[in-house]
Image (cartoon, rainbow, N blue to C red; front, side, top):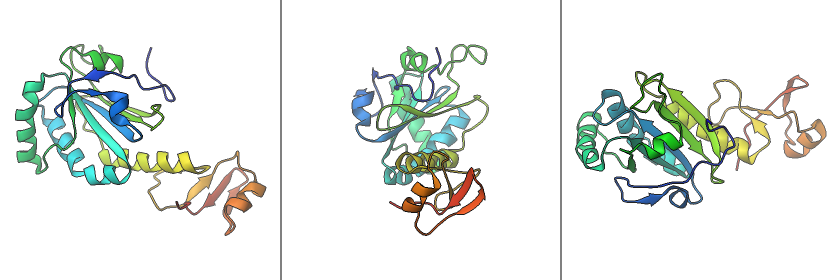
Length: 211
C-alpha cells in the first residue's frame, strides 16, 4: 500500500556514503528530505545532487537533513561524486544511500513497474520531526526536480505547523498568508491585533506571523 501523508515514515538501517545509519535516529529532531535517483552516472541526477549541495546552507538554516538514495553499489558513489563536483561546481555534502537490493526503494514505493521495473522514479519525501510524512512528490525519470520549490514547501510546512494559517497559491516566505477557517474572528483578533483583510468570510488575509 502506498505511503500517504500523515503516515509514519518507515524506519530502516542502511549503508550510506557517510557510513551506516538508522534512519529515525539519524533524523533526530530535524526535518528530513529523502529523495531517490534512478541510478548513478545519469545526467539529470548529476544536476540535482549538485544543486541540492548548493542549497545545503538553506536547508541547515531550516533544521532540515537531506539524504539521497541510489540503487547502485556504495563503491560507485565516490566516483560519481567527483563528476558532480566537476560539472556542477558543488561537492555532495549530504549522505547518499546505497540500495542495490532495493530494500529502501521498495519500502518507500520508489519503483514504479509501469515506468521502469528496475530503477527508481524521482521520489521526494519530506518528513517532520515527529517522523510523519508531510509531503510526497513523484517525478518521471526524464524530468528534473525543482528544489527551490521543495525549499518553498519546507517554509510553508514549518510555518503552518507552528501557526494556524495556510499559504496561498505561489506563496513565498515573507508574503501574506491566510487564516484557517477553524480560527474564529474573535480568536483571530487575539492572534492578530493589527487586523487582517477579509476578502470573503472564509478568505482572511494576514501578514505572515513571525517567530
